[in-house]
Length: 249
Ligand SMILES: NC(=O)c1ccc[n+]([C@@H]2O[C@H](COP(=O)([O-])OP(=O)(O)OC[C@H]3O[C@@H](n4cnc5c(N)ncnc54)[C@H](OP(=O)(O)O)[C@@H]3O)[C@@H](O)[C@H]2O)c1
Image (cartoon, helix red, strand yellow):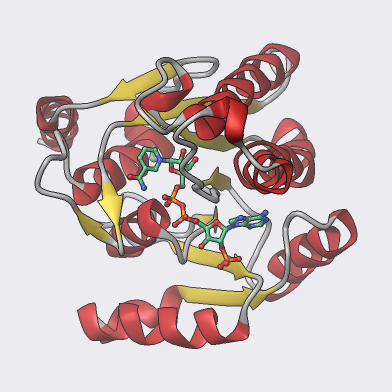
């Protein structure tokens, strides 16, 4: 399948749990995929992770050392992507730093800062970096969020607070972009992924989440600006596959 041929897609957090599934599916659908990472070791490790799955995919995988949470570095990363690959057509923000909190009253405030940084501020900086490009030239910004933003589970208090704020960040940015050429979408991901493996209790697989996100960015989707899509069942993915297949016939 080559539904994303000639598209350049940035996956912020691409080395992570959800991000690794997104990167693989986007590469398999023909995109050039850029993954910025703060760590040189992670860059090396991630290249061999993709290589082991399918060596030919690494030809279109661009790994860039840098921190998207730092505005100056983020500007530099955008410049490098534009000069070394092409102007980006889409960016996916799939960042996070999970800290369990058995009780909010007992949290340590350094953990609060780390969680707010990973699930809120870093997503905000990704938006600030890429959205102006998409507002001017067209393009898609996707926030990856999770069900904890809408309902706290045991021990998820810290992450629930930060991701609920991330949901409002998405809504506000989508509203402010309505008159522009940018498409801004939130995927509320119900796949439960640890160590880049879909966990047995998950209602949907990481691969299916990757397929859905790839479809959303492709010309086949038709546009979902401003929508928060709760992706919890493989049926949602089979449905879009049927529609895409029918449109090809
Ligand atoms: N995993 C799940 O089961 C699950 C379920 C539902 C929703 N989600 C959502 O999916 C998204 C990603 O979650 P994940 O579990 O895949 O995350 P993750 O693997 O823990 O982390 C993803 C990447 O985020 C980057 N990162 C973390 N903190 C950062 C910061 N302060 N500044 C810049 N980069 C930072 C790291 O990249 P580098 O170290 O390479 O720079 C890391 O590899 C989140 O929005 C989360 O709410 C996840």
